[in-house]
Length: 253
Length: 229
Image 1: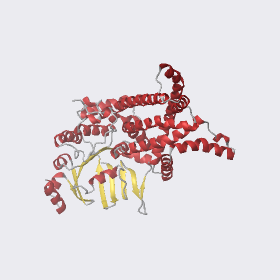
Image 2: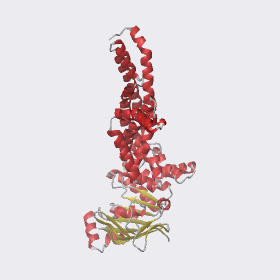
Image 3: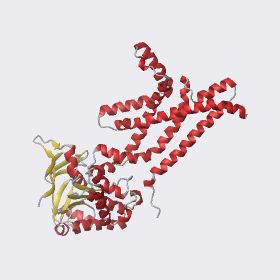
Image 4: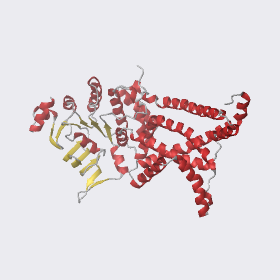
C-alpha cells in the first residue's frame, strides 16, 4: 500500500523551543491514525506542517509520492513552487477545531465554492455531490442556511462536507470536537466514525481517548515535540510501555 | 431673517444650483476615492516592504495635513509650479483641483477603514481557503473582502457624511457650492435666511445618506443574523 503522507525527520522550531523534534510520520492509504498527547506536545503542529499551514525547519514532506518540501545537503529546507504546494495541499482535506466556515456563504456555497472556482469542476456535478454530502452529514435541510444560523456541531459537520467535496485522498482532523459543547460532540464523532468505517484515510488529532481507540488502527502518542510511542490502540491504551504515556493515560482516563 | 415666500423663492434657484454643485463634488469624490482606497489598503498590508512603506507614507501625508492646505496646494501651489516650470498642464481649474484633492484625501481615510476591516477577519478564514487551494489573490477577492464589506459599512458611512460637510471647504477657492452661494446671498442681502436654507439642504443630504446606509447595512448583514427558531 502506498503512503499518502510521508513526513520524515521533521524539525520545527518556535520561539520558545522545538515544536517538532525529528518526527517521522507516514500514513498509508486506508489507514486511520489518531494522534494523542497533552496540549503543547506538538500534535497539532505536526498536522499543520503536513499541509503547509506551518513551515518546517528541516525534514522532508511528500504527499501522494510528490515532494512538498525537502532538505538539501546544506541542511536548508526547499519548498516547491506555490503552484505545486497548492496542488498538493488540495489533495488533503482539513477540518479545523474552530470550523473556519466562510461566514458570507451558505452551507451549500461553502461546500461548492472551491470545487467550482478552484478545481473548475462543472457546477451541476459539484452541486449534486454537495447535496449528497449534506445528506451524509445529516444537514440536507440546512443547504441555504448561513454558518451563523448553525450550532457548533452543525458547523463542524458542514466543514467536514466542505473538505470531502474536494475529494481529498486524506482527511486531517485538528481537534474537531474540542470547541464543541459536550451534547453536540456525539453528532460530529458519528460522522467521523462513519467515514472511518467506509475506509477513508485520516489523521485525527484528538483529546477524545475513547474515540481514538475506537476508530484508529494506529495511535501515536506525542510528548515534548517527539513521538514517544505508537502502535495499535489496544497496545497503546492497555499496555503502554513508556512512563510518559502511562502518566498521560493516568491523567486523562 | 426674512422668511417671506417671495424672498425664499427668489433665493431658491441659486441655492439649488449650489446644492447641485455640492452633490456633484460629493458624488465624484466618492466615485474616485472609494475604489482608490482599496489598493492603498492592500498595499499597506503587503509583505513587500517598499509598497507597504509607500502606502503608509501616503496615508500619513494625507491624514496628517489639513484638507484646506491640500486644497491650496493643488489649486494655487500647482499653479505656481506650472508657471515657474512652464509645465502648464499642471495648472488645474477650480473644480478638478477640488475633486483631485478630495479624492486623494478621502482615499487615505477609506484605505485605513478597509485595512482595519480586512485585518479584523479571523486568521482561520485564510487557513481554510489555503487548504482548499485558493491563491492569496483568490482568498482576498472571494473570501476576505466580501466579509469585510459588512464590517466597514458603518465607518464608511460616517466618513461620507463628513465628506458632505467638507465639500463646503471648496468655497475658499470660490467654487460655487452650496455654502458659497449662501454666503454671497447673505452678504448681499445682509440677512441670515440663505444660511438657514443651506443648513436645511445639508441636513437633507445627510438624512438621505443615513437612510441609504441603514438599508445597505441590513442587506449585507443578512448572513450574520441568527436563525429565528
